[in-house]
Image 1 (cartoon, rainbow, N blue to C red):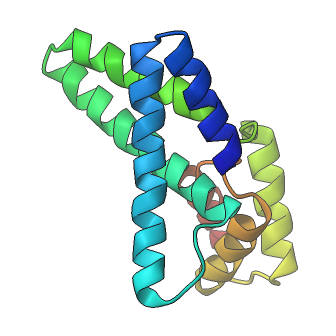
Image 2 (tube, rainbow, N blue to C red):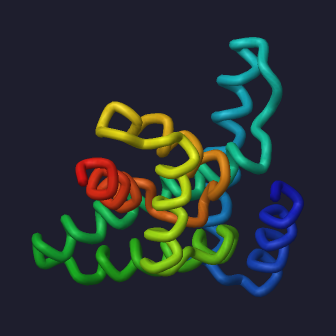
Length: 150
């Protein structure tokens, strides 16, 4: 993942695409911050899975900012956040459809032998391990909760 992001940054710089360049630099900075934190803890640098989590978090932050800017009538800033979201999304795996998410949640609940809401954490752990970066785990938790509550 690091190499892919680095190569994309070089291409953006050569084509003088300012928005893409600045967004990819922010991504690299977030990865470096995570690496530095890992080094101080004495653990390994960020893996591809960690990078997917970083990208997902960055998208969520920009979605929140975009919504706030839109509510405040700052449409130019809202559009800037949305452009950054699209750039970051290019590096994430394809997002699962609603039906695929429901199926995955059902399988995870069956796998843990889900008999109630107390098994929700186990089911979510399976989903996070099997589908990193492929689904919105906030929405998936609602689906899992609905399945386990019945």
